[in-house]
Image 1 (cartoon, one colour):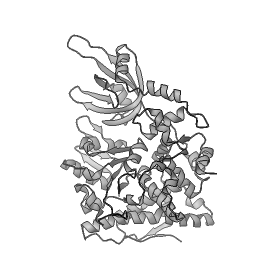
Image 2: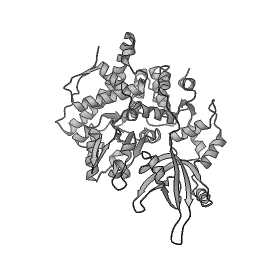
Image 3: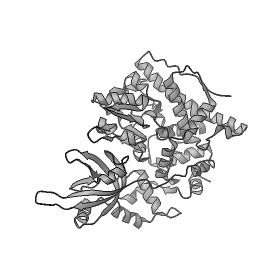
Image 4: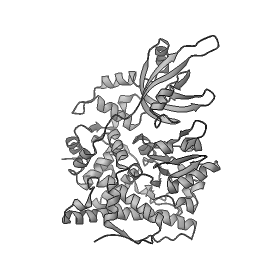
Length: 485
């Protein structure tokens, strides 16, 4: 049985058929994959046949982006219900919380009722969010006053509940390589597009590709990926999950990232699982306070802003391009030169755990897009979100890995975090090492060493090497980690 049909068989209610021409359903709308999957799944039968008319009707009503129609309905006194991407912004002059719909021009002041904000403090912060909203228009009162729009209800976009035990039982029915293909197809890639002539090399290439998910499953994991253009870095992080916030240079401020003193609202580093800077080389941080806060946060996950103690388990990532030779190898061994100026400091760079060698991954082509059954993107993103605080996977590291107690603390933390994240991705069904039989324990140790521990050491060692190139005080030799016999 091929992997597509096996996914459909084992995840009958959570699988959906995806293909490159699926986007034709959405008429050019710029929707992330987790939203598209929700809509397609909602209007598909068990065979994957899509009710195209129902999709069109849903888009025309619940996701209507025709500002003229929406304004006319509001003027008639209709309550307008939409599922959409909103941008929240505190309006200090008005003393209210304003919002706009990213794809609709309301041509009117628009505010969120205080009662709605009080019910969703963790969702309705300054910045972007997806949800279902209800709008009402309030007509001008008196000759000098203007009409305005209120958001009178809000429901976060969370259409799926997660049965984690069901997920774990399903994982047991796949081999390791099959499971890699399950995850890759959930990312909307065709696993076969990553194949090489050598089977072992193909598996390790898939493994490198899945490294992009580490930041989604492990709290406070700091990551760097540098690679050529066109390998899908930005696409994955902007489409995979609403819990990941991909931001360009213009979105980096202390108020938006950490805490807005005026509105007393926390920023995206508080409300998301990971914040990733796109096209990192172009990033310029002019704010001295933000530089200081970010450096401290990368180390401890805690910062102080005035009398506010900010604490978060959000991961932080940088992704960008790097110059390559004709053989697709970095032109210069000083990878740090492709990073923003602020991060070209050994003390700051040392606070990153993972370095992904993006040049080992292929450019996207037509054959890279999944065509078959795969897990619903919104579902798998909720699984990843749930995984983050499962303590049993870190416990397995302590059960089976030995290390010198005099090891550098940052190296130890980094290797443990990375290995634990790989275990969550690849072997989520192994939650208690001591419940395995002796033969199962031996097999798991071998797999763990190859697919979790060794890659973790390698990815942390690249960070250490780059620190050494910046500052000879840093040694390149990593601590010794071993699987306990």
